Length: 191
Ligand SMILES: C[S@@+](CC[C@H](N)C(=O)[O-])C[C@H]1O[C@@H](n2cnc3c(N)ncnc32)[C@H](O)[C@@H]1O
Image 1 (cartoon, rainbow, N blue to C red):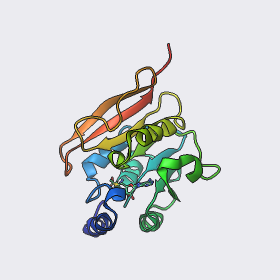
Image 2: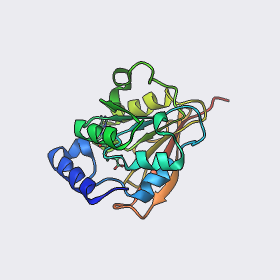
Image 3: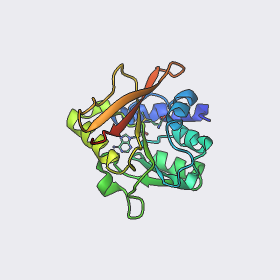
Image 4: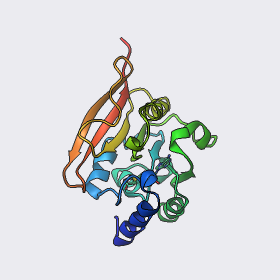
């Protein structure tokens, strides 16, 4: 559960690096659970988490039934990485840039994944970089699997790409500050 120390830690990090951190506080439990609920808990394949921060979504994934050893968590901030290693035994914490997964993921952790769960602040990046991130994540997901992304905006942070990528709203979490939406990105199946 997210304690007061995490809120202070997160807020301090946001003060120092607002664009990279992307939020003033960790996601609430309801949002973290709504994201984790979109992940197939029983799959034998790993789950890639992008931007875990202090770990509320990591905790929700484990609570949902995803074994810690199945989670690969890519985080840019070294202090958050150290905290995740200490807090979530078994989780594969990778320090690096989620926008460059080809460089960041070490051999053996390149996929395929049952799902990708992202809390990255997408809207701080240009549209092409956001689309490249979605494409790169979907390339690593097994057929039928989804990239789960939250945002605070009314619409998806990257629009559907007709014939290539679909996006649907999976949840609207009013009990988060601010309220957030959970989006599912999938490869469109060719007929
Ligand atoms: C909005 S916070 C979400 C943190 C946490 N998942 C939550 O829901 O509270 C975004 C996180 O993504 C991390 N981040 C931002 N850009 C990143 C990048 N390019 N690669 C990896 N992590 C990144 C930030 O350090 C921060 O921890």
